[in-house]
Image 1 (cartoon, rainbow, N blue to C red):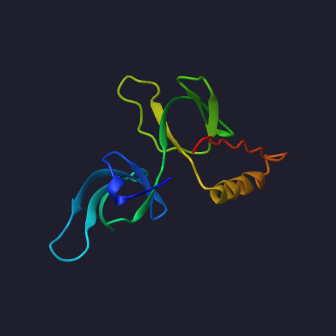
Image 2: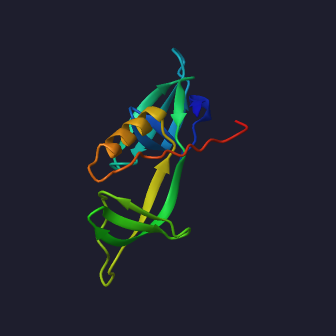
Image 3: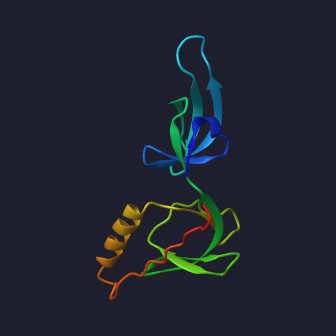
Amino acid sequence: MAITTADIKNGLTIEFNDQFFQIVSFQHVKPGKGPAFVRTKLKNLKTGRTIENTFSSGVRIDVVRIERRPYQFLYQDEAGFNFMNAETFEQISIDAVIQKEPGEGEDQTDLIMLTHQTREKRINTAIAKIEALKVITGKVVRIRLEELGK
């Protein structure tokens, strides 16, 4: 979904330069001369770094819907790291993850996974990589989720 700079809000997650950023702060500026612009502070969701960027007034920005889901580490096997959703009990396996070590006296740590809607091209690229793996014996099945009424 795309918005214009007039719709920017703190906490909104956007795709910018092929990365996901959360808007930390913004300021609409209308100088005496020249066009208006929006000065923003953006936090990279992958690295945690904060950058400053200026958008021209009226520029379209791609908004990304990020869902935070609590997952708990279960075990590690040859398929990777296995996690269970703490709310739905759904289990997933991922190849690698960056996560803090457990605290003093803890034997495990919880993990919050961020998921997002993506472009079809990226899904097709990911499916091609998965199907190329030697451990995959069949075709990967894609289930498309679409929202009606938009």
